[in-house]
Every structure is written in structure tokens, then in C-alpha cells.
Amino acid sequence: MASRRAFLVSLAALPLATGANALVSAPAGAAVPPGLLAIARQIDDITSLDPHEAFEASGGEIVGNLYDRLVVVDPADRSRVTGDLAESWTVSEDGREFRFTLREGRSFASGAPVTAEDVAFSLQRAVRLAKAPAFIIGQFGLTPANVAEAITTEGPRGVVLRLPSRWATSFVLYCLAANAASIVEKAAVLARAQGEDQGNGWLRGNSAGSGPYVLRAWRASESVVLEANPRHPRPPAISRVILRHVPDPTTQFLQLRQGDIDIARNLGPEQIAQAEADPELRVLRQERAFVMYIALNRAHPALAKPQVAQAIKWAVDYGAIERNLVRGIWRVHQDALPAGIPGALTDTPFRRDLPRARALLAEAGLADGFEITLDHPAAQPYADVAQALQADLAAIGIRLRLQSGEQRQIITKTRARQHEAALLYWGSDYYDPNSNAQAFAANPDDGDNASLRTVAWRNHFHDPALSQAVQDAARETDTAKRLAAYAAIQHRLRETSPFPILLQQQEVAVVRRGVEGFALGGPAYRTLYSGVKKVS
Image 1 (cartoon, rainbow, N blue to C red):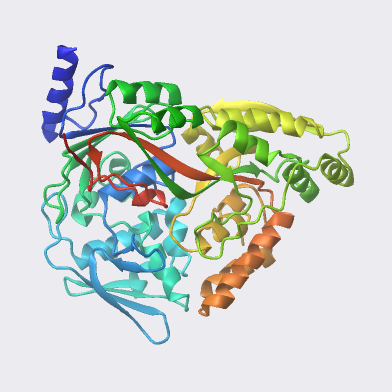
Image 2: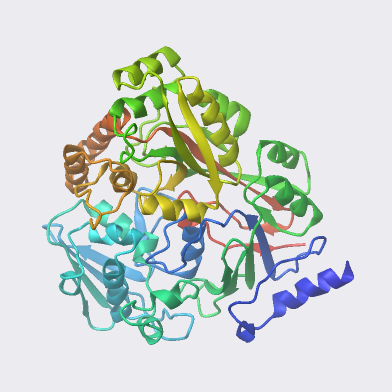
């Protein structure tokens, strides 16, 4: 035991120069030192930690701790944004020009000052890289060809964003609060560039931000290590954060009780019930803007028939899945916009109705059913939910071949449109209804080289009228009319989309006594570690 504790103590004291590729894992039975925060969670979804490429829940959370943005969602009032790197901003009368003034004295972890040139470069880079989150900035009509003229500087502290056309002001600001709008240090990134990658190869596993932490190490499906940034205006109390990939909830709970970790992030209903009765543990809950859904690729002949998706929506026993598999950590939710996002619908119109589901299959000419592969994460609760879906759909003749894998493998497969069906989650990228409405409904160009590669695009869900409705809603400046438009979009998705929406996450974290200041955020990138401290 003494040697294990000594190992962790030495780990907490390691200098940054030790090496970015060192694998860090805490031995079982070792107490976590005061300056170290050890978190167990599933992190096998991470494919990159470049803020202009990262697009998964775990990666999004980490990026949110590494980088600052011009603005952030106000934690006390999520209906507004407040300044982060920006001290102030103005919007022109026509709603097309945004002028930001940066705060004085902000610096990157390297010590270099954060300048307007860094901000303009970062926003331009997000568009030019054309990675998965590029559309968040690009959707305003910005392209690699025009972004240099659209985003400019005025002196060392002035940034000007000129949009080709008008959009709802709140929509633009919410997008600038997203991870895709993270500000990177231009000189540091370009110094590591390889060819035309703008430093992407290096930044996938390193950081160049001004946030409260810097990235020290990432080993895929193993661990992530963050180091405190002493140059941040609010330096963290915890000098080092370790996230360890522990996919099994039972193992997470055992490590938590033994003191091997400070926080467990993926416990199941049984472990949570035990934690609530343990005076050494504290249970935190937060409704999260994440939905679990089935992605049905319409490239498959059977799934191309709209009645099939509707049949599946009527075949699932949603209530049984919640009661028996995910009680207290997910709840039934059946629309693309998660509850808590402005404009979200919260009624649950679908229920298990086998005669209706069979009739829809017969209408599609598939009365005898068919067979497809359902890709799903191997971790819980996805594996159990996939088995429940297999049983539910078997009752109407749809035979699921279950194919489990790491989350990042499944995400990569669906991004390439190589799946038949997949059980996935989707989290809002910014706190505006357009985030999920666009993801699930907008697909104006279904071609393989399309610039907008949403969830709808990945599954060949091409409805031009619905795509136009999404764009019109994002431009609407009257709040009441805008929310009504999103309600209409959700009703349309219920009737036509290849996305049975199953559940919304009720995120739970269990922390050991003495760990204070940890709070879960609605969007992934708002779960911050900088306010955490340990008290005896």
C-alpha cells in the first residue's frame, strides 16, 4: 500500500517536461494525493483533442477545460451569453456585423498574449479545416474562400465578424460559445504544421490554449492527463487532473469506495443507490443536453422506406428500457431537441404498439421483416439497451445483428456512412435549438462531398423542405415565431425521420467526501474542473 501511495504522490509531482506520451494510471488501493483529481469515466469516444476537430462528449468536455472562447453561456442564466475573452461587443443594426473587444492581460499557457490575430486565425481555421464541427461557424455563409474577408482584426484587441446575411443574434453568439469557436495560439499551432494541416496533426494530442488547464497526455481508450495553467486569471486549485478509461460501472464504484479515484462518472442505477446510502459519497445530478437515438441509414434498401423507421418507433418499449436498464440516469425522451433547450418538445407520443408497427412494415412491403446490423458501444448502458432493442424489434420481424465496439470506432463508421443502423448519443454543441435541429433535419446536399455533414447527411435523410425550414428558423429574429418553427420541425421529424429518439441523459457523478466545487454542465464543454478543491 505504501508503495502505491508513493507512486501517486510522485505522479502528482511530475514536471511537465516528463513527456506527453507517458501513460498514467493509478494502481488499485492507492490514496489520491491532494493536488491530484482522479476521475473514472468512459473516454473511448475521443478521436481528437484539436478543438476544431473534436466532436464527441468526452473530448468536448476536455476541450472545454483547455480553451477559452470569445463568449460563454452564463451558468446562472442559460438564456444569455457573457464575455470570456471578449470584454464587450456590439451588433450592427442590420444584425450582420459583430465587433468584439478583447480583455487586456489574457495570455496563453505559453505566456504569449491572446491577440485579435489569434482569435481571427482560430475562427478562420475552424472553417478551413472542414472537420466535423466546421459547420457551427460555417453555417453563417462562411467558407474557406471568404472567411479571411469575413473575420478580420482592428488593432491588437479588435475582432470583426461580418456575415453575408442576417441571422438571429442569440444564435450567432451561442455558436461562438461552442468548442468549435475555441481560440488557439496561432504561432504555436503553425510552428507544428505539416503541409496544409494547419497544425491539426500536432494539436490532436497537444494543446495551445488559454484555458485553466493544458493537455499533458492522451492515450486512446486509456487516460487523459491535464496540467494546471498557472497563467490563467483564475488558476485551478487542483494542479493535475487524470481521467482514466474505466468502462465497467461496477469497477468504477469499487475504485471510488477504495479511494483509488475521486469521482465516478458512469455508474449504473444499482451503484448510485448504494452511493446515496454511503456517508463517504455524494451524488450529483444534472439534466444533460444529450439524447440516445438509433441512426437508420437510408442507403440500406429496407431502411430507405420511411414506414420502417416509423414501425421501429412504435415497436420500442421505451418505458421498460427506462425502468429496467437506465433508471435515474436516462429518461424517456422522443424528440431531437433535448429538454432544457429552448423550443424542445417534452411530450412522448410513441409507445409500444405492435399491431401498428407490423402494419407499417406491411405497408412498406416488408411484412416478413428483414435483418440488419446494429452497431453499438460495448460499454453500458448501450450494450443492455441494444439487447432490449433486439428483443423489441424481433417481435415485428426485424432481426438485429448486434455489433459492439469502442465508441470512436462506431462514430468513425457512421461519419463515413458505412453503417446500417447504430445506437448512438448526440449532445447539443451550443445552447440554441438550431444545434440539434440542424443535426437531425438539415441535409441540403446529400452528395459524398457535401460541406454540411450532419447526422441527417450521415444517414442519407434528405428532405429539402425540412432543410429550408431549419435555415429559416435560424434566421428568424422574432423569438416566439422562432420557437414555433422549431416545434414544427420536431413534429415533422417525428413523422418522417430515420431517427427513433429513445432517451435523454440524466447525468450522475458520484464524488468522495472532501471533493468540493465539482459541477456537471448541461453541454459537455461546461463541465469544468477549475473550481474543484479538496478539503480534509
